[in-house]
Length: 319
Image 1 (spheres, rainbow, N blue to C red):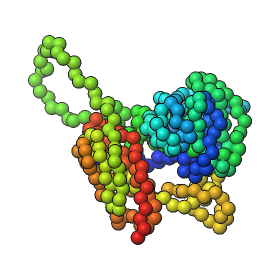
Image 2 (cartoon, helix red, strand yellow):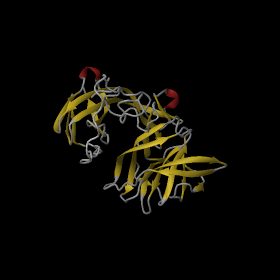
Image 3 (cartoon, rainbow, N blue to C red):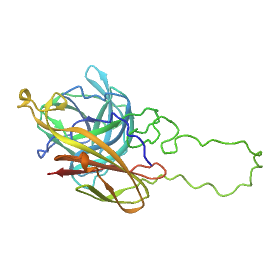
Image 4 (cartoon, rainbow, N blue to C red):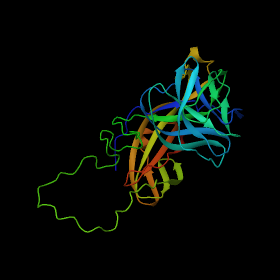
């Protein structure tokens, strides 16, 4: 199953790409959100399809939080995604599906005794000891700090609450997220028979999310094990050195030589491989890969349209 990747997926929130410095927040049982360098509000309506966080303390209860600016330095915790219980520290990726509006903030709820990694970059974040949607808080700005969390925002052209890049194979059809996107034509026929006697109920819809395991990227090959048959979408993105200019990571220039270093995303390409349950592989187009570093992202999708959490690996081409 092949579907076009919608353009415009962006990263919002803080920055997991900020280098780790071993420091962490002292805030627990509270919401934290990056506001500088700004603006860092969600730029367009869409769907957050996953979020990442540098977990400094593995505790149950980390959540994506959506915060609304009430004006006059007051913020409202609007809603929370389901709680997560990371089994390990370090950068953890969590699949999600949270419709959002432009102007809202993608924040992170840190449970009691939890902690989030941070970087001593130019920036600032706010925090509030709230955990119930509808609660408001005010906060002073914690300056010179970049929280190591972020979220992936995808467009949602048909407004069905599914991200058009990784969750919706039918971005222009509200009622469907998996192919076929159009109803099959019907032909006139005899009158429908009388209803049959009640029988067994229909089987429940497939809601089991496939998983990708044992993912290895080597040269022009991607090896993996899929828990279900279907397809695997492989996206390869060039990673380039950059310098911070405000909230953006841009191409280095002489004027920015003292600005913090960062990693910026260059051109990307997408391919799809059909796979059965079990061991599988995909071949990368080596003609598109020059010397450098790349991010390789894999998402599996089964026949019912359920998408796996993305699995990300690094690939370095030395030739």
